[in-house]
Image 1 (cartoon, rainbow, N blue to C red):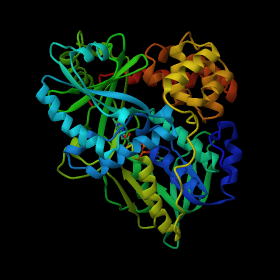
Image 2: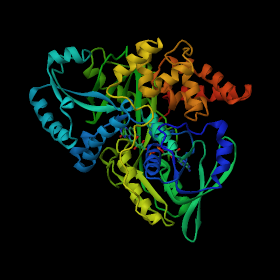
Image 3: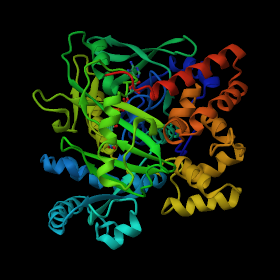
Image 4: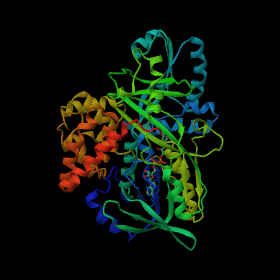
Length: 543
Ligand code: FAD
């Protein structure tokens, strides 16, 4: 297997041939699910020389892994729940992800405003313990801010109420793009990776899982793929996949809905991540990314099953907006101020009797009746250690110890040193785009941004998006629908409040050229994307 970093994923035009080839091979590992859990596992397995086939039922990261808070964080809150090992693992992992993909792990200040010096000192004790667990470097050690620093760093904060703050470091990622980067890294080492290709069954021979059956949703083609080990990494859908192996498998998950809403930064001009308290004494946050400030998250038991698009209700929106008025000058916002919104399901491993907020974020690995390895729970931040723990079990199923492997080369787009700002400035200078566009491209594509610009630099519908992004999404990242490009490649649906509505049409037109869509198919694609965009902001449901 070659070790090229950042191969292209199998594009829609290549998939017929690629699917034909699947049946001729026997893989060490078949992975079900192309969220961060499956993607991270595919890369770690390929790094150890295993042959891998991965199937994703929808688009890559279409489930929870595009709807998270996008923080690579230790989870300070979990220290209070006594989860020291989990916090330590996550806190240490922040540095590794930053090394592998600096564009997908951007250092940010988390600002906890407090009213008194006494409250500040109390919090400092916790944060110092947290920093020790995470072996935090000197540059990243927390700072205590008084009125003067707050005036400079977070001028929108109401300083009559909040005269002090503790600022500590966490990292901002882009969840869906972290998934794509891991998948492309795995593909560069020979893994066969397919989106829009649900697994519909697990084949069992002599009582042992011997592969999977999958049906391509784009071509209708069904394949039977032989594999020595099958891993179920289907997130909120792990129970359904377990039942392919064992129809009587008991339930495992407690689903919790988490909502985020985005308001234009002009309406809520904060600079960092602000930690806020809600009336029911939970912690939420507001965080700026480009021209959007997103506020999250709710944490409520979800009883409607594992929906792909859980709805955002008016009550969710009001709950998230309410605390802002207590923290930010002119911070009283209305549901009409919300211009983007997304909801995801946390696939928590059930702990009967506990509220969702108190359930552990630990992962759990189960071996099923026919030897299928199921990995459930966990967090985006811990995807690599989760993959390593899963591989230990995979080794047992395969009957051989898997070799140790180093961290591996940087993820695609991650081979640059240091921070995003110089990269964004360099892109702007070299390619004659605005600094804001340079920063946006740097955040999405890292060191590959220049290649994206070379594919086409015309602005789409006078927005910050450029035409090369559509070509890149289709030819390098296997985008197959307008929704894929809006939601999980360019992230316009989440972070571009104006452009999300105007770029759908030029995206559809260019995809039609690249993929040979008919007029009818192009209109249907556009219609689907527009319906989806509108549904995001329809808060009439009470779910
Ligand atoms: P998913 O991303 O849901 O992937 C599973 C995939 O399996 C899906 O894409 C699905 O389509 C596919 N699938 C299902 N059935 C089949 C089938 N039959 N065949 C093929 N494919 C199938 N963690 C953090 O570290 N930091 C955060 O800031 C953070 N914030 C969060 C905020 C919210 C609101 C939520 C809900 C979670 C958050 N998390 C966070 C947790 C984190 O997002 C999840 O732990 C993680 O994304 C789960 O990834 P996954 O791959 O297991 O699941």
